[in-house]
Image (cartoon, rainbow, N blue to C red; front, side, top):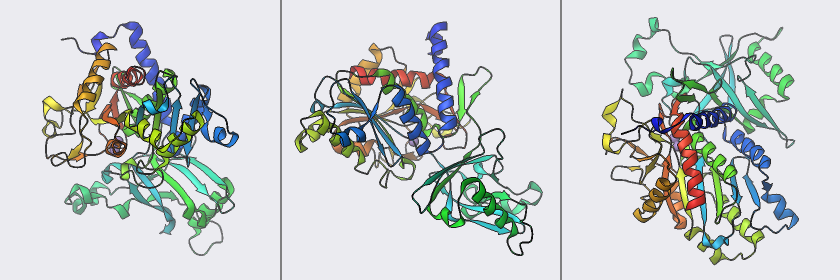
Length: 457
Ligand code: MN
Ligand code: MN
């Protein structure tokens, strides 16, 4: 049997590579949920999308062919391309999360110890803490001041920028550390960012910290207390890179789940308006349980659809229910790719493989499918039919062997609206590591799959 790679001729291979250049640029600059939303809006405007909130304020009515976006608190982005059919006949929805595991600064982060200024962190999401030490980190985020202004901070991405990081013990003195279980090799309170060492002149106490504060004041106009109303995220420094001698893969930070975020976004932008209204929802807080005002459990998505229906005409509580009832959604999140170095965690017949295309997961969850969204086979059959007709490379898998572990996504949350929803996404190696690996082929096939889904379902 031919592999999927072999099915590509020169011209389709060029398209695949070109698409991945755009993707690498996106994940190199979008390392926080806010940066993903800002870049998403920038791209959407280029494709003629208008701000739904401006339409609401102006009382503008919306029609077939109109394209709008809805920004929720700068951390979620919903895009709609209005189709021919009325909204109550349902939408075709692409959903992905744009938050990724990282280290957040605490609200009182800065201190000085033995002439070194350091920053305390609290990790976000599922990280193997030992992977985040002794490597270059960048700081991305916002500092919000009492006067209502917010300062954007990015340190460590420009080649002329300094980088930051967390120190590790030298092997010479690590005998005790190396005896510990991996979860304790580096503990949460040891994840301290080394921030500076030059003392301010004529300061008696904490002179390095004083110098750092002066520098922060000069560069960003922020005071120590402003950390309290800041969201500063420590992420791996530097751009995404080609991976492998044959450049067949991408190494980048935050591919869980920005690889599905970018492919969903581009499919919606490139796909334009279809028969049914199409929607892309890029959501925050998945890595910590989808809670909070910007997580999928929040009502922002429902509100955005209600606002849209109001401006399209025909709004009613029942029509909103009908819209959700009749909608199809790909809850797009990454799959664990089979890793030949660690074959013991997978059951080879039901596993995602690199280079075989988008992976569909009928269910996720753990211990007897606990907490899963178990997609209906009627819906899966329709997807198979669409993907086959559109010549999409796709596979079906589970996250590891039964009782080996597990995970969840946003699928079960949107399933509460009684829509058809299934998990699907790009297989990833080294998932949740600072640098994650994906196949360029899978990324491109996933984009094509999303295009097929929004236009043919
Ligand atoms: Mn994910
Ligand atoms: Mn994840």
